[in-house]
Image 1 (cartoon, rainbow, N blue to C red):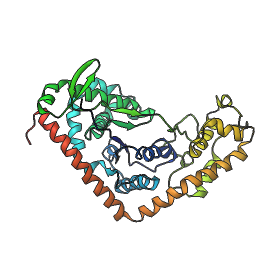
Image 2 (image 1 turned 135 degrees about the vertical axis):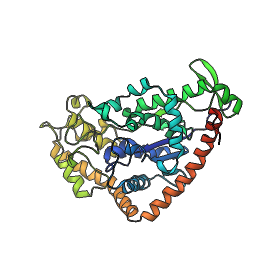
Image 3 (image 1 turned 180 degrees about the vertical axis):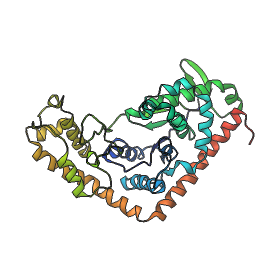
Image 4 (image 1 turned 90 degrees about the vertical axis):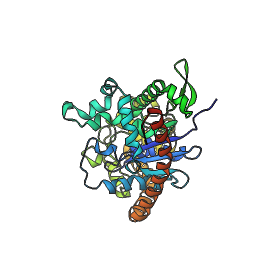
Length: 354
């Protein structure tokens, strides 16, 4: 039986400075996945205008994300690094998916509710249709796996729903075109064109919280720069932010149970564990009983040790925009070649003339 060729796809929005949470939760995992997978990593600049239409320096932000990918260890020659707007097939497939998806599905998306807030009627149509474009980003390459955090898992489930409905609605045309593979949807065998993408949520992808409030996720949109460690921060800034990070008056516990109800302590221990590739239990075995006045300097030293080489390389790359642009152009051409083939098949299946 024919099967879909394994392919990993993921993307990062060019909105604001990348921070430690983006690195530990996503980019570091991208680097690890490239060792044994065919990977496509995208700067999703079309998504960047769904909530904020006008940006001061969108091109600079696009280059910054690409620089972060490369500085962190992603190989743009073996894999594909590009910006989404360079491949118009993303938008073409998104329109088809807008017609496949149901309004009720979109209305259930919790991220739209969170981002639109109380003034939903004033939110852009693009923000509502964001998950449909995300499905197109993945499926225009017929990707099979996507590394995601918990906050994107619902969108990935929607991508599966869209793929499944397309496969079922067009299964006879897919079979006639000879472009699908045998697969099972529910308990029904069909000849489908799009894979039901699988999330990659296992492994070291910690949920990094704000340094000012351990109950909130570290975010680019937080008005306080002290709430996050940016990938472009210098060692002095990193040390200052960790020194000023909110804690409680108690020392570090020796057991994991002692972190319950202490979100700031749990967050700092989790960051140390992730940066050191250790478990929280290992960290507590070493630092349990110590005060934060001892632990914070050790965490700052570790963060600087891990992040400084990435920061230096990002700055070098950002000083050579010609090189970054050449990488994105090459990646865009290679991505477009793949996407054109898939969209050609979609045109045949749907019945468009081309």
